Length: 182
Image 1 (tube, rainbow, N blue to C red):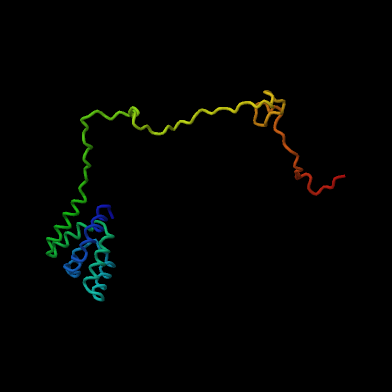
Image 2: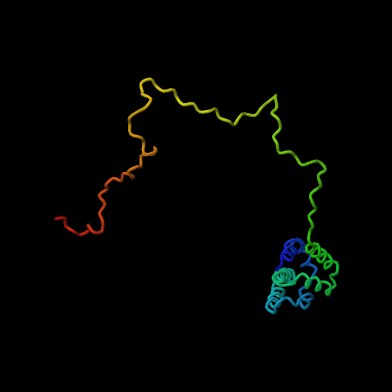
């Protein structure tokens, strides 16, 4: 089922369901709906016999909704059954839903586009500054010499000159399994 048909059913038909099912007789309209299958027709007729016209019309509309081109056939069936005003209302709604909607173009601006420069700061109140003060290094303590002879940390340049230091974890290799050391 198309989007427009869905909108017609969910919008107009469902909101006017009580009016439609109370005015239209199943036995009158059923022969004018070729889109319904034989199974649909039998089910609707059985519903009418057991539960009455109101419930049968609800089932008919639900069955109708699942078929191709149901809006055109339903409107034609309503006209054939002398429900012209109801058919005209549904047809008007269907046509309204089928017409493509044009979105109005945005209004034309007569003034130049806005400038993206920030306005000059106001003297009355200025927003708090987001800048942080420059970082200062602490003054050197008199006890420590300016150049230390300690080993450089591992992340310092030149620390990996001889390759990384890998501790011996005592890993057993597959060749060591099951052998007795002599």
